[in-house]
Length: 260
Length: 270
Ligand SMILES: Nc1ncnc2c1ncn2[C@@H]1O[C@H](COP(=O)(O)OP(=O)(O)O)[C@@H](O)[C@H]1O
Ligand SMILES: [Mg+2]
Image (tube, rainbow over all chains, first blue to last red; front, side, top):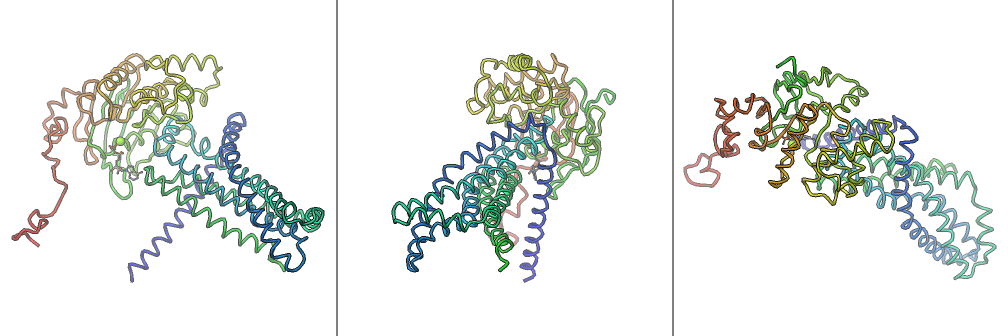
């Protein structure tokens, strides 16, 4: 019994310590702003690796989720004879919830795990140490551009997800099931509020982008520099990011939409 | 010897994860010479280099490089001091996403504002020095182990450092690559007047090129001097290490319980 309590306490202390290390790490990363001539090309490269290369999976998922929403929405709404409201339903679901959340989950799986593995491998092969010994701070040179790239890419990816999803919903709802096109777009336009819905959705994806990128680069930087350590860090990135995104989504939703 | 010491360690104590790795190491590394630091795997040779490079801080004791008290340096000054140090990591540690050329150019691009054609000249000169001028467009994944280390060597001398540290340069190399590295280390030391610190457990190669050597075991320096002095060293432990004897003061058996009881024989203390 005492052992259990002790073990529980130890887990607690370790969790707090690792959270502290992660915060310290974050301060080191965002603390120094490099010269634009140095930092900008690095950032562009990472935006490509993190953002552009995640585009395919985001577009395909967005399309399918929009189409599924179209189908489900039509089935439910036609019972009440209000299938014309399908555009409103699809747009609000996507912009408020599904686009930020699903994009973040996809991002954690696609880009986050790749970031962790890449940084972990650089650590294991002493590339980070050798950079330090060359008088270059790896936190600024390697980690910072990756963190910023994740932070910047996520909102854009989430917006693309929404747009593609709305098009997917239209393909099913309008082209296939025959909802009147005017009411699809008209209902959408009338009900989606820019600040309440679009901006709040973007805020969510900014938060998720930051958290996912932070977890990914920290797990890579903090990993045990062996092959087993890297693979476990990669798994942790995906698990922690997913949990953090879902948990934060509830909190953010409650704050944004919870004032009935 | 003290007056010409480039690196001085005094009573250095260092622990990691609660285990004491150095327990009062005192050592002078002379300027412009090759000093070999030898010891069994896991005694902390790499750790020692990291202490010198300021990547780790000792729990107590003095680490001084070129007159600077390394653990007390501010971040900025430490990074400046590191520009005078080259370190060849055990794995080479080339940047995998950059070509050989760009790897060698990296420190130049970061620390100097030289025009591109001068960078090119320097890079080709350094690659020529390690015999790999023709390999400049290759990626690190296309290099053999020996070539990787030579490129890493070219990179670590790109800024013409005062000090170069080699971490196990011979480990896992074939005889020819080993010979090449031995020659390079010796040539670089004599042509550039580099202070060289060579960490290794390859006794014959290390003793063949170093001016001074010291042996570390159990967190202490157990023997030091010129190669001749070491070969004639009275300590049994030094002789066991130098001659690679399987049993001696360092026992063959990891500390274990009584044999008979472990195997379940009658008569064993149980
Ligand atoms: N990051 C680390 N965390 C904890 N212990 C470490 C770490 N790196 C090395 N050690 C321990 O420090 C000791 C010395 O390691 P090292 O300097 O790499 O030895 P050597 O280079 O002589 O083989 C080893 O016993 C190793 O287990
Ligand atoms: Mg080592």
